[in-house]
Image 1: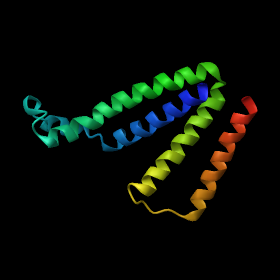
Image 2 (image 1 turned 120 degrees about the vertical axis):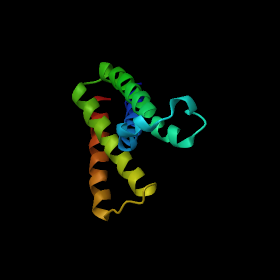
Image 3 (image 1 turned 90 degrees about the horizontal axis):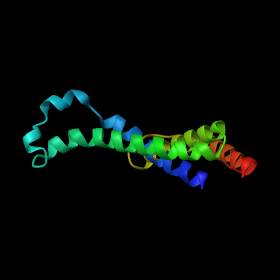
Image 4 (image 1 turned 180 degrees about the horizontal axis):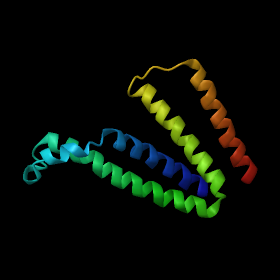
Length: 122
């Protein structure tokens, strides 16, 4: 079950990363709090902050559960590997960022490491 919690934590970390990317605290002065839900631009300013909070807390919660059931070094390595691969895949597919074939080879090395860690501790 720890591996499932670790995967869930990784998904929340990916969401947290993109929330952080779009978070702009300087724009909060421009938010019309009385008309928050009636003006779309207000929501686009507030949503990254809400995502930052929700994804961040959820990530911490699920990661802490996973770490109680496996060695911290394995949990951290797997969590970070899944996050790195997830972010790269999202960057390539959704944001159309350029990539090189060699990057997929290196991501495969990360996956091999994750599989090896999984097999070594069960």
